[in-house]
Image (cartoon, rainbow, N blue to C red; front, side):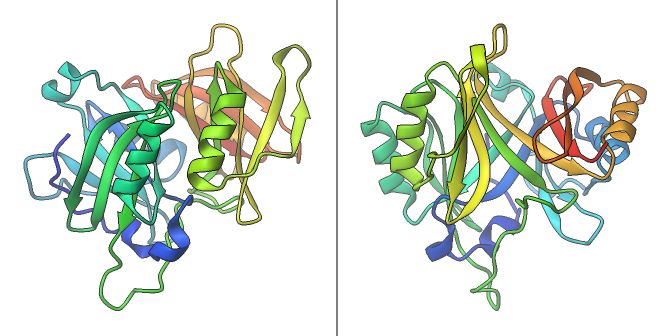
Length: 274
């Protein structure tokens, strides 16, 4: 991955409040133009133009004028290093280098050492089970020192509303993320043969959950984007050349979800009313 970026939204979160908060989401895709058409029809996203620099990077716009995240073009060099189409999350931290050192001390891996970009300092790491994510200390832009990222929201459309980790060792994962980011996981739902579905909380807000891997399902983070109608979104997925692997089905609270793959191969998840 290149360090040439111009995505400003992560910097809107003040550092003192950012530690442990999801501040950005990023789609890695081999065809940003085609992916843009797909997510425009399914979610209502608007992919921006390619920004200056060697790396193909674009902003994901929302209908309200804000940003939902960014898009990075997947090139041959990235593929040679094991990259694949996927959605990744950024977690804000107070000190990137100290957090990376903690990740290593807790048996995690550093996939991309800390480096600086105009919007802050970032690194890509993986938890002890190999699940990747970014950590970032953003630099607030002038005049927005008290601003906050709004790419995550439990109930707003065109934002990620749920961060879900499937892992072969959920007990170890809870300990790792709890110590690293202060995420609580005391509340849970018993899923019978599938074990416990542990809810993750940060500063009093439920941000997602961690669970064991369902038979045949891969380990990893999954980010649920909120849409107004899951039924309509599922039809748009199929019409746009994507696939629905699970759902629609109802989850506690009355929402419905689907999990699928976009035409370029990235897994995605949606949540919303029926």
